[in-house]
Image (cartoon, rainbow, N blue to C red):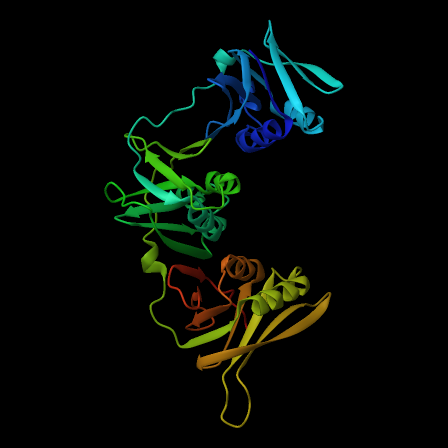
Length: 377
């Protein structure tokens, strides 16, 4: 293999595929990046056997070929090169000579023939979704998935394709996030798959934030899913199992509804969290309706711990229904509010021991459910 390409493009490509490089693996070659020519382009691939990422960049190819190089070393070296033309040449023994400006190096790699095969979607795409929308949906849902493997299905995000709609749902034992979006084209049949949340999080970081169409293909055996955009190919394994019926977990009635400014409540929750670190991250929400005697409706957010003290944050609010005192994990509240893009948010509550529903005002495409913390107060 012998070619030249631009340092900026090569560095960006290595950063993209580097998200799929195995950190600790019994298969050493998965710590490498596969570099191979593909016509007049350079193709970069990496996999940790759960996710595989491939990207392409323009190059002037003199000789076709391929090699795998240690991901960390080659990425650090290329990032440090001057922003000019980079030449790559593979020598015998899977060694690659890389040169730009006054810098050059010989990096020893491994035989490309031993690199795991990355599946290619040979079937027709199952659905098409706008890249910017897919990125937004993932960012609003994936963080709610479980991080431990006690229940493997909960470490994933359930993606349901139904006609022209895509619904993503993630849950652990304490919270649930549901987001719906409209597909660019109707899906070829109704079906659901469970995708590892970690995979989707990595995908969201490399998707273009625009209206480019992303083709989504599920393999016939339902073991893998493929996302394809311009110069980007991402393959993920799917999680087997039955995901909970999330719609049944969303309360359909409430006694109190509070409408507040999203950023103001988020700021109050974050400030309260400084004082609640030594108290299980528990923050208290005191919701008070107008009493008819001139007292205005409002919401007070409190963070406290005996060792450090306490703070109280006042947030203007519109309150419908009864007053209520309820406690939550500050991180869960902050995560939910941080995922909401509307200026106002509604909190629907039934009682201090019942799940609360958080929704953006003015749209029905996002629902977040948070379980409270039981207190003696």
